[in-house]
Image (cartoon, rainbow, N blue to C red):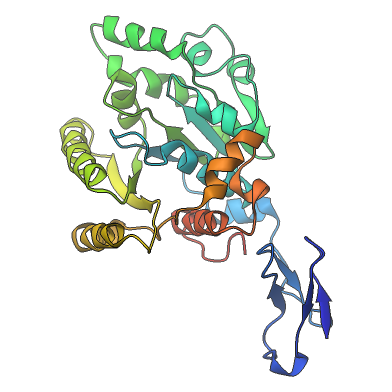
Length: 310
């Protein structure tokens, strides 16, 4: 029989006799989306609110995307993890603590305010927060965050809790708070680690990033002396290219050292670098690409639900 994908309109010639009776969906090999097979009743899909309610914990999960080295895909990971969780039905707040403010660019929005105005109380939370997608809100970063760093430095006591004090009153409205950090080690990064409970660290598969991971782990240990709640929960290999022997060797070394924390790798995919120019997530720009599938897998890993975004 001939099936037409309802998403991309491509046609597929399939021998119906080869389809097992328990299979109710087909996956388009062109766009990667699934669609129900004709004559087979698909399992009912849960409403997004039901998915979120089933997995919601007491308060939101606070996850920081952080490592002290740049160029490893931190912002790409933060944006696509946050967007993927929102597409899966969760209410997500994405917080950008980088002075470059790239999260806004990647989502194609131009916020008039953001994290700075929330921390300084110049604006109410509903004025500082921008809705970027359904169930996805953004507290934008940008150059104005330099003033927040000075504000933190001038505090005689409790400067490391500045971000905690600003975000805690508003976090109850969300299932996840995803915090994107800047490269390096500055007062805002320390603030992030005094707010989040879980850390996801992207690691590009190169020697210098592995060294950066070791240094970052030492920094986390220093924070844990004052705040035991924060812990490294996920290590995400990025820019994986099986054609590069060194990359595979580094991946094996990371698996040997940090196996329980390891997430399925994100493969090198040019679509991931092209999507920001269009202000789109990878799911919107190239839903059938390897990059989109890899970040869907990350969403499933973080949410602990293998059925999401199928």
